[in-house]
Image (cartoon, rainbow, N blue to C red; front, side):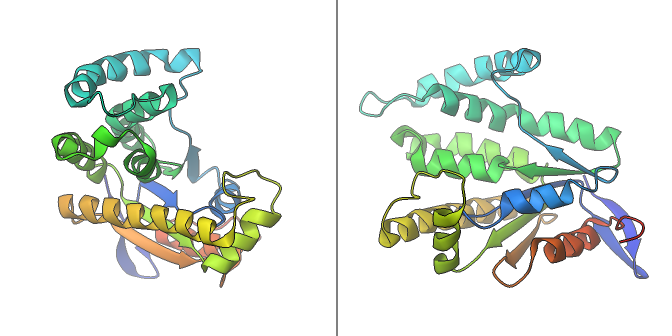
Length: 241
């Protein structure tokens, strides 16, 4: 998926498909909004929406293919997939092919907020228990292979737990742990970090082309981070900035 570009006289690899991840309060939405100002070079991409009529063929195709896999894994002692979770698993199965096709046809960097690493973390940490059993390993290996061949870069935003706690509690956006005690919030953040670490490690075993950038958002402002990422993406800043 990569194409070579020259930056400051050095030949580098330009990523085409990039996911931004991070725990709650890390600044993902703010950074994506900042990068969205560069629409001539960056395309902010949402995953298929099960509520959109235009996305119905996607969910019919990949949802139907997923049903026998899940029936094989299902155990009566475990709860069933919720509707939203079924949509997420369908997205994990089929979305890489859509993104690969888009990347081949266009020249923009495709930027994913709440992309595959986030969805896999949600499913592995909070999904039905049968998805964490050894029997499900074949399914996960298939997903790791698909996304290792799709993602070029993962940008991992993070900050100290105290910073994240303050942001979660003071911002207008609601969150499941917004009114919880500090220890509960810190454990919640830790679960996501551990899940991200495991998923990225699995992806890295499938490819040598995946780059992971870790950025501390308590030390840099969103504009500064965006400027740094534009260089990493091989993009130019807007004229006059």
